[in-house]
Structures are given as structure tokens and as C-alpha cells.
Image (cartoon, rainbow, N blue to C red; front, top):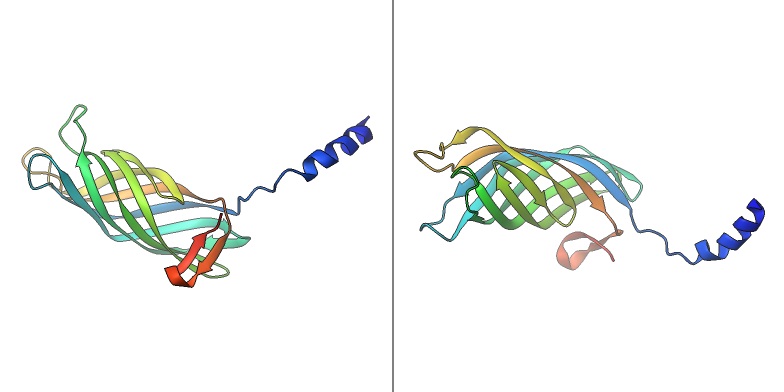
Length: 177
């Protein structure tokens, strides 16, 4: 019976396309984030990460990902209606810039980023997804003056679902499709 099942399943399995998952890494990110409030009572503010550091451990295209490297970012944010307090209820977008190293090469990544923050929150890029938390030291107290600077810590998972290729015109490696 098992032999018959194997013979019947072989043609079906042979036509299933191979999965393109080629890598994953667990990452921790930390650094200083600065917030510049909107000039009026409404509008968008500006955020900036510098200095920052990313450390990942995993594999890409069969090569080990390891080590720590600089992590920076910048973008804009909008205040969300407060849910119990006036401080750091934001949704933002922007760009992050970081480097990861493998046994084969160094990857310099520039990716769009989104986040939602209410003291703690979550972030996403095309490759990274995770959670983040703000921690002291703070500049500002949210009561007498707005929070303008904080330390942040994030942890997430970096996933690649398509092989990377090197695109000289774009200045570095990019995911294929």
C-alpha cells in the first residue's frame, strides 16, 4: 500500500514549484531616536535614528549571518489620538539603512520602514518585522515638555523569501522575485 501511495504522489509532488525561502535571522536593534514635533498642533513630525546598531544571527543563501553593524533611519510621523496619555502615540514611515554580514559578502540594506508606537510598538520593513520599546534616558517628560529623544531597543526577525542578486545600478544586493 505504501509503495502504491508513493508512486501516485510522485507525479503530483514533482509539479509543485520549489519554495523560495532562502534565509532568516533573529535580530536585535538598539540606539537613540530623536523626535522633532510638528510646528503646529497638527501635522507631521520628523524622527531620526542615530547612532544605532543592529546585530543579526541566522543564514542567507546557505551562508551564516553574524555580527553587529551600524543602523540609521529617518522619516516622518503623525500623532495618533491618545489612548490614556498624551505621550508618544505615533504612526510613522521612513527609511532605514543598515549592514549585515555573511560568510559570502556584506549586504548594505536601504529599506522603507513603518512603525506604530505607544511607548512600545511594532515596526516593519520589507525584510524585518518586530517589536520595539523606548527606554530611559529621555529628553522630555511628556508633561511639561514633549519627549524629543529616547533610547530604543527592538527585536525582530529578518526573512528573505527570494534569492538576492547584485544590482550595480542600484548600488547593492536586492531581493529577486
